[in-house]
Length: 350
Length: 270
Image 1 (cartoon, rainbow over the protein chains, first blue to last red):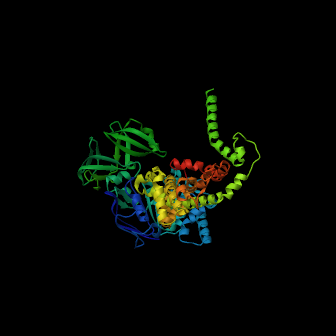
Image 2 (cartoon, each protein chain N blue to C red; image 1 turned 180 degrees about the horizontal axis):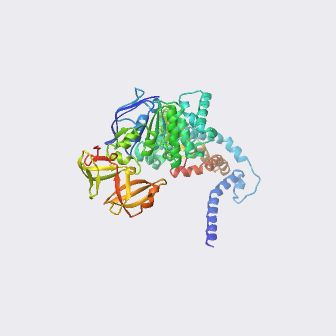
Image 3 (cartoon, rainbow over the protein chains, first blue to last red; image 1 turned 60 degrees about the vertical axis):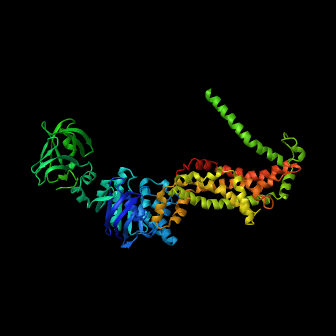
């Protein structure tokens, strides 16, 4: 069990800043996901917590103890890497038991403990295999087993699911979440996949260019994104952003289409609407024209062109019978759920 | 038709290569069992083998010389393996010295050994260890260590960095992580490097000739000793040559595949 706290942490290589002045607390037992596009500094942050990267300035604390200059081995953290980093020359059991060699656990005790960990992860029948003889999902479990055997203060995950195929990823995701809930160990998880971030985290930290742009529960981040960047990064398909003018009653798109949108904000704005909040109605006088229909099974993603911009909507597959490629539709959305952003700062207004 | 021609050409080429490699070996082997008068007839293939030459070279201390050679090669190769593997790892992982080190490490190899041998000899005299194995070991390290290091860099390149990092997070020091996790990944390469380094040291004659001329003469120097003022003692020399050659041939057989891997940049998958 443990807490992690970062205080004004900076990381730079020469004059290039990777992480800028980051302060963040990870409460005991929390599951925090750092998410952002590649190169945003999320992995570097995780590696600084692990002690694999030095900190250029600032302080890293684990359980209240300053570990900024300590080796990874003295930090009481366990880490799961993207490629699992299983030791190729050791068997599954030896891999899981490996951290116990560092703590000089008696051989028989280590064996018993690793056997029960292997058993609990459904690896009981594979203990004498070498990593190369395992499937991706099994390798992943071994990596997790090796992480949990030490009962560390903190779990660190560096994109641990991205090497799995889509189906297995979803399965493993829920298993990982259940495991974390059961063990209650503070976990910090890095991913570029916003969907993964939303399903796993209690707290989501969205990063961009080495800075935190938004921190909150996944629901908060999804429903109240504080900037255009977060709004478009989180959620799939992407939120539609339209440029236009608000006069207090209506929003007028730059190409002339008008939408009823009462608000206290007037002037040039960016209007953001989630695809699932857009309703399309076939109409010969409609503002938009259907450009693309992507069927996903129960739902379909529909791209509608509106002048030069496009609007992305998600509709139930049953409603597709009166929507055709090239036909005109009228676009409407609920005013409560729409997001307004400043055109200059790209920050949230409403 | 074309294929047939190609195949027979290939066969011819292989035959030429085989004969050119095997002929001297066969000749030397036969010569070592011949009496001096039989030696005058090189075409003589079938005769009663005679062990005079072998008894003679053993009497002349060829086995002691072989033991000295083995001692020098073993010590050289142990030091090279320890220093070379750690150096290669640092060059591969931490890019120590930049890319220049990767190949710069072999720079000394372009110098003729004659440039280095006199400083070694002078130092040996100054420290009163001349005509002993010690200066020879140092001299051999000057070419075995860089080659072993260079050879291993490619193997370390193919070990993922995350293995070491994982071991460090799992509670080990950087050195322990290297020893327990990284090094085992390059054991095949290390084995090949050790055998290769051993043969390099074992085969050296030049340094031995000048640094250990008499009392502690190593095998190649002893072999040259059969070229006497009375002429070359062909039969004896042949037997002595076989003592030197057989271990190398056996070693090459085991490392030839790894040797190609090491030279082609350690393109081994783990």
